[in-house]
Image (cartoon, rainbow, N blue to C red):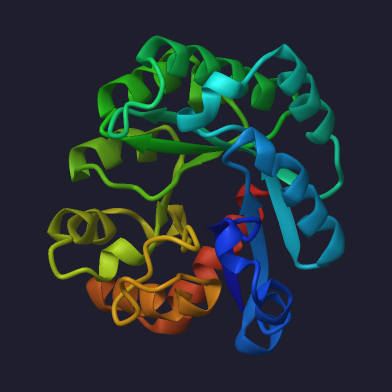
Amino acid sequence: MIFESHAHYDDDAFDADREELLNSFQENGIETVVNVCAAVQDIDRTVELMEKYPFIYGAVGVHPDDVGALDHKVMKKLDRLCSHPKTVAVGEIGLDYYWEKENHQIQKQWFRAQLELAKKNKMPFIVHSREAAKDTYDVLADMKAENMYGGVIHCFSYSVEEAGKYLNMGLYLGIGGVVTFANARKLKDVVAYAPLEQILLETDSPYLAPVPRRGKRNSSLNIPYIAQQIAMIKAIDYEEVVNVTCQNAKKLFRLG
């Protein structure tokens, strides 16, 4: 069974058919989904989803593009939600220097604060990092992420060299639809290099749909395309990719 480690089913893109789509997952081999918060306004919607659907768990945190809306009141709410029985991680948190929506120092301040939240609550973290390779690594190294409670670099987009640094920290790499793109040579090299035991499957739905669905709304139903590409790159069976990545996610998120 497939473990979807990163999706956003609270997104407006699913308003028309959310219930029908989510109810189709089990019959299509999707065993577990982690719905990941991004914006402050999404926190309550993620809680609603994980309380309504037995197979949906949640990650609570604020994306770097929305940290301008973060304050101590919101942090207290996130802290409280870390004790929810279906909260499995703090995320997605990190740095994004592509969109430049928030000041870099402010991003780093709240990245550190949310990592401290994960540490305090003995939870893994989910990191978003875009065009911020050095600062992301420096923050994690300074926080001694290798001594925390595990984490994943979601939608990994950096080099083999950068991958090695995170793998040496004991972190996982989230691999999604981009690995199926013809021009994704760098990511394919990372997948070939990384141990399968440190890879998680993800879609980042509704974004980044894999080939042959590229350009359309993404969903966890497209994970087989990602797993097939990983299997091809590593010259192993599709079922091995699905089974090992499922066990990886259960280990990281402490789901037995």
